[in-house]
Length: 405
Image 1 (cartoon, rainbow, N blue to C red):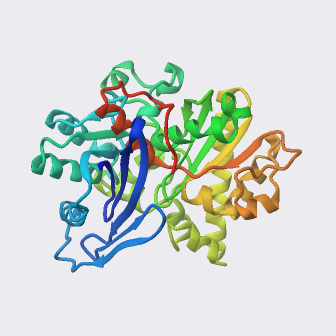
Image 2 (image 1 turned 90 degrees about the vertical axis):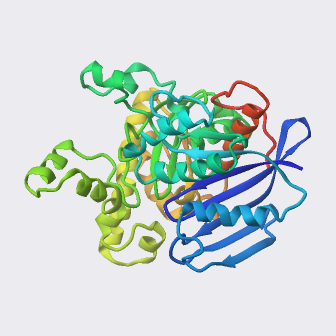
Image 3 (image 1 turned 90 degrees about the horizontal axis):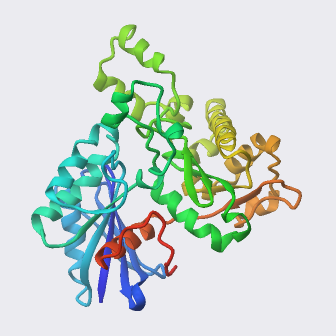
């Protein structure tokens, strides 16, 4: 069978999913896997679409010391699937910069352009690009499609897109991009199926995971986001602070004598839930802890999500629905309840039983705003964009035809 491989590379892990290209250009998920612990305790786990284990293998750290080696290990196993012909590889790439507002087939020139954006997404961009670089050298004729987290937001109006800085900097690319776009694009496309009554209205989607942001949708299109030039802005995250006064950074430079490299490490790795709690960047660990610092970190997170929701509701001119998605949003009833309490002034009321059970709709009957929990699927979006480019179709911001699995 012809198939599309979707790759999402992180600093120490390689996530992959494979989709069969079925008749009528439909996609069928056939497997998903992850190689964790790259360089420390590498372990490859792959399951079939029905959850059946296909491989669970550990490696010595020297066997898989980096992402190229991780890709090689995953490729070696995939080659054992004799009936699969790889038609293309789709990649999540966090930052597309000003030049890339839609998925693109990677060339050496495009790869160089994307590498130049690495300072704007140091936690993600270098790792996103490492497998692309490896495959481009090893299999130059294999189509590789880069799908950008910034692309979904590129239709923002000028008021939302600009910082209050000289226009010359905007022309150079210093602007508010927004991120988590593949996730928001998936949710925007699911809403007509899950909740057609609000899909064309004013919706705020909260992508709450280790990285977190909120997006304002009007009729399924992004009009505003809490993230901007980089993935540091907006709500607090696992290790990132979210919105912060630039004067704090000037203070760190002058009073603390911290240089750019030290400040970058501080902002991306020492702040957020980790910095507030002093315990962990993982919301699950904080919820399991009775430490007052952990409780404070969770409350602060909910408070900032509430504030940002008010901002986005103002941008929309009102609110018809609120959607939780991603790791925390999909799995933590406690965090959802805390955030809903902060949104009561907007008319948000949730049904405690529905929330505890993680139902799709968790708002109560008397809620003025519908509240949903919708699992995201960035990998499917990447596969769909990849398929569209393979077929020669112009890449749309929101593909309309898809076959869910």
